[in-house]
Length: 330
Image 1: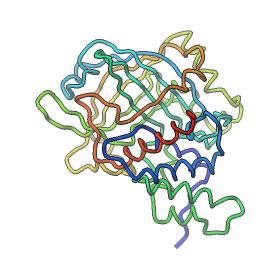
Image 2 (image 1 turned 45 degrees about the horizontal axis):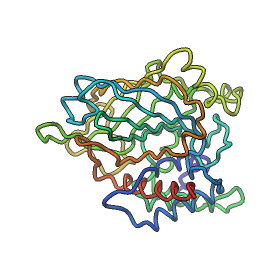
Image 3 (image 1 turned 60 degrees about the horizontal axis):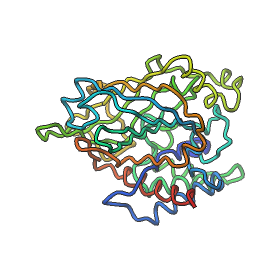
């Protein structure tokens, strides 16, 4: 049987999603430390910089909930008027000088911090993948290590090819993320499942989907080759100065039996989606490099009415980001 093929460039890019904070039920910290070590081996160490999604730009805006959102969740985010939001768009990898159009820069990410009416904060982390290449933190660590061992001179089957042969999603997930014309023209997905809880205690698993109001616009390889290395970072500020950009925030609802603990398995497209509201991005911050130093986006930083599911990657992302934040803050 031929060996499964997986691009090393994709692994460099998809090192995206192990990012958030410290949960009550946590994965072995050594797994998180080894994951960040593997990222550092792939991308090198850059003082004061994120181990992954190192290159980014920070913007400000607001979220206005829909009436439908208030019915499915008692979260304060959905109960009142618009709330302020901080948004960070980013390229994948831990390379702060990566070209925005490089294959490794996929999947691009969007992290959000909502300032709730009670003074608390709630975070959401999404990216351009439709599903994740592995299901657990241990598998992600294994994927990174396999990529590190599979340079251009490695004998075939490489460690990465052997890994892909036993992890089918690792060979296909990267194909779901493409290079956009703008951060404002990319669709961002929540690969992890969360749980809505309504005022009566009814629970509904869901995954986020952020759909650009202007539609997704993906560039061809020829078009990408004509763009400047920092075109995404430099385009978003002037765009917002002309007019705000917005995203329709959707929730794809799981049917009974749909897995909530496996980020490698997308739910069928025919599953119901509901409109949660509108994210409006109004301006880039004056000094993005300074602003992002203090930003810590935590997937388990939630509010009453939204809970984590049994997806083990949520804890894994939380732990790895805690390690990365601690190291870059030293």
